[in-house]
Image 1 (cartoon, rainbow, N blue to C red):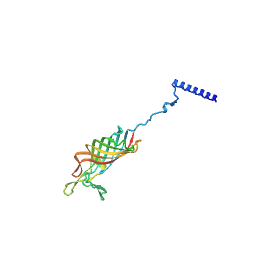
Image 2 (image 1 turned 45 degrees about the vertical axis):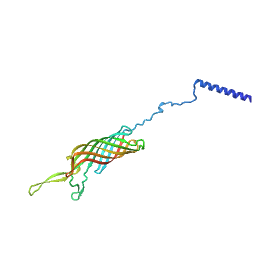
Image 3 (image 1 turned 180 degrees about the horizontal axis):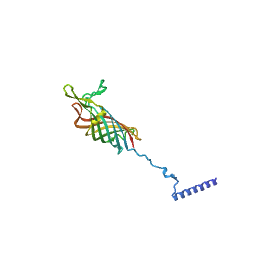
Image 4 (image 1 turned 30 degrees about the horizontal axis):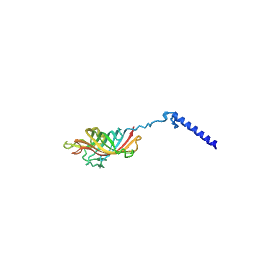
Length: 247
């Protein structure tokens, strides 16, 4: 028994001396592992796509329209854009009739066909960035820019001669849309719009959304659409569908 006690005492003294020696040398028992190849630890290479381009489909009381846009995201909340659109213009008093004898659709008293073409430069402000998930991104938008209005005649005058007394009579004959383009002319003014909308889905290469815009483009001199009736303010409410690509 004494031998066992002596042996345990000697072992304890030896271990204590070994630990004391290690502490004096300043060594730590903690082992730190490092990769042999430092390239194994790499930072993420994801770069957000800040630019977009695409097409707009416009729907209004005047019918359908189409447009194109370019967009750049400056911050998480602010983006700038430029877009161009073409839309038909109609007067509230237009009523279309079908002529069974000629097979044509006729709008009585219509004088000119109009195409509304705004070029708008503006800004978008994203709402509730930190409160709503990224696959639904609402925003407010506003812009201003030059506006063109293309005026083409709905009918062309034709002079008829009365064979009885050789008197002349002017008759207006309807011409189709494409034939009227060569007689058209451009009018210029300034306009813009305000609106609100949202983009849907994650920004992984595509951009899709919907917005409501109110366009306003005053033309003080007015442009005649119906007989003795001119339009002085162009625009109105448009529902716009956006389809684009990020790059």
